[in-house]
Length: 386
Length: 142
Image (cartoon, rainbow over all chains, first blue to last red):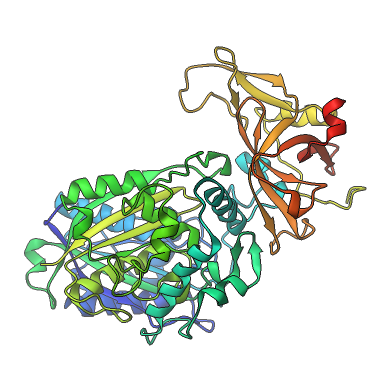
């Protein structure tokens, strides 16, 4: 895959509040936008990836069929991998492998979700919501996703001395980037004190440690090097990718707080053959501030337990040694549920010099990161300039 | 709604988990173990993950535990929980981690590593949900 497959089109809908638009209509907007960006047309597409079965995504058990039916898209290669927020990145990696193997030529990966204005629950239950399976030992205790990440934060603080103040710097850095992004959901200035003064949702996580839900969508177009040469813009190459699967139960949190991001990152760096020093920006999954601190550890940008001091050091801010979430991240720009799509799009935009928020000057190499479930699956992709 | 005011979702037991829920009716905490090393396995499964090389058997547990981590949950979509409540992961005596609630405790006294003891929340079907409370000096002597 390395150097064989490129991202040649990327589009993020400016929508943050869909006002009742169906998510499938946003898929159409995003696919049109990404193909125009690439200079390709719908007739060129022979591969399609999406996952649309979560609340607000409009699909159900047969989500790929639902979306394909609405769009009127046929494909000879397709994938509907559903691993929560990591899905779009992992689908793009699957698409890259398919293209490299000659199974597909032009693949669209598309995502849209309207959890705010189209909050229809899908027609199935899962282990997080139903008191059967592993859920029977967790749901009766009033488990919540924020509560789960809050318990991780509490343990991280106990083990490593991480503080709420350190974590608040993640929200502040994202907001500074969002202030520059005309489409970001929240752009007003934010201070560490504001984060700490916001209400506790689940201790030690405050309201402003958590990313707000938006309605939105995005799409990317991938192709091999032959077609990539003729597209509108300079291709952004996939240098490396790695995944790792864990599980859903909270009882899996290891004592030393290692998450699947670690294995995924090791594979991605090995495949890309680049060092951490080469990474000009990182788009890190930021559902909660603690996720960013721990992910930076497991991505290998600092030692285990040093995520708190790292995020508080200024390194992650625009102009720092490792700018993150340059569009404002999920914390301030856009997070309908599968934020991985926007991390991928922002990686492409940074390398093209098209970042809508804080553009990293001369960005040549970008890391994009996705997480799904409760540290259940991680996907890491490293992108490089032409 | 039970006498305690809880109407927590009643677990949907299956053949593997039924012995656990049945024992709760008698106020007994049953946890799976592996014979070779006595290691505890939680939650109940058909096989001993991750090695898959041993049969699991049920053993009665003391109900002693320590607090591995917790969160005081102030906002929650679960109407059956009276807020705020303490969501926790406890480390059972013998090693396994279990999701639970901490009850009969002030937030200020919660401390990772603190000793805990088992108590029960009644469920609608007659089963009981194991939860934990700080181990008091009195219960230590008892």
